[in-house]
Length: 246
Image 1 (cartoon, rainbow, N blue to C red):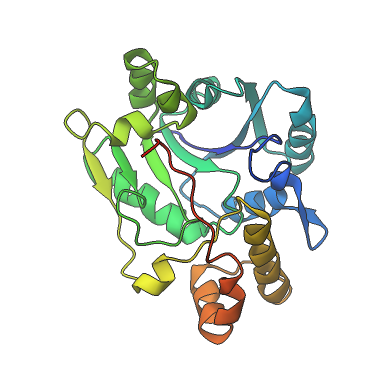
Image 2 (cartoon, rainbow, N blue to C red):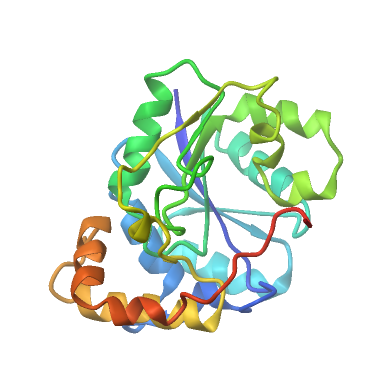
């Protein structure tokens, strides 16, 4: 069974364009994220799933420089882009990640993968019930399930948010959530990059932790929060965009 990590990344993000290549410590956020994901021992390959838009040429160039795979597909139909990337890589199991998670903890990703493989489920994640900080989001499912979903729905929301149809249909798919056991205050932290305030916090975290411990994880971020909770107020007011309008 080949396990593939895909990172969805593009330059034309709506709230913070170009965020995946914004520099921290002189390196693009996407490069820092890939460095972290290369420590995921249960994954066989990493592919950056970007678009055919010429604006995303720098993302492809970065992937080439880093020696990781890349695939270019539809900008709007992210499901199709990720599915084709997985099929081209001849993957059996997909670990779906987005490029706005530059603090992703490899240990968390490994835990979700291991839980998927040790249970008979169609979808395993830590997002069905949010007990991890946003930015640790990891979803694991068979490529065959995503291929089936592509034939079942033409809803634009389902095709923009790759695994949405899967977890919105528990009557069809066996779902499993992995809980963190963390305190609610930790689970409410925003460790993703969607706005300028998010980027400011992530930059501070990297500048404080990375120089002395490049492989810092969620435990180290939590310790930083306990000593410098003021930093995490930077983006506390940011509201996450809704997948579907309420």
